[in-house]
Image (cartoon, rainbow, N blue to C red):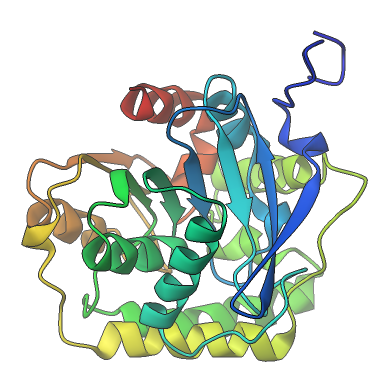
Length: 288
């Protein structure tokens, strides 16, 4: 292996240098990246609110890609993907299905975070045979208590970060204490490790439409998650202000046989703060 993280057989195992590709399906061109050895069931990553391809923590992606084919993608209207952001989570799940089928896959594992976890639930409910295993982090169920409050929390923290010239994720994902602040700074630095071929940031309008979809999801009647029989790993921090930590416990209760990890003294980004513990656990869970 050379010092770029690329083995000599040219399998890319470092997210920082994974090439950005494009595929067109149903009139939308989807931007995506893939890395890791091809073959077997791929792990498709579903990203959070306002996020693009550049918002995945390489300390989470790279360990999974060591032995698995990993795919990240931009939803329609986000980053380098064309099309419009839909105002419902169900339609986002339909778009994800279109993208996955365009790539030719009949079976995937799902790794999801926050908004991505809401989309992943709808995808698994609608296409149960497509999904083999589910990782749901920093997320909650349709109709979950206080999910619709994400909008107010998000806008408030964006205002606070504008005043302090920080990245909103420092406030939204991490506790503002002696452990959370350095973890936040380290996370933001890791997101900057990719220097070439970076994605386009989400537009304000697309971001607002995603927030509307989350609000609608929160106010909807709950889905029947008892029909999900997929092996499911749920994780969060113990102080998630965006998608309250109690909703991870709610998911755990409603998805039979699921596993739950709650990390101490951490927030919405608990899996990123505790990446050294969580990444190996996720790899173990996703292993065939």
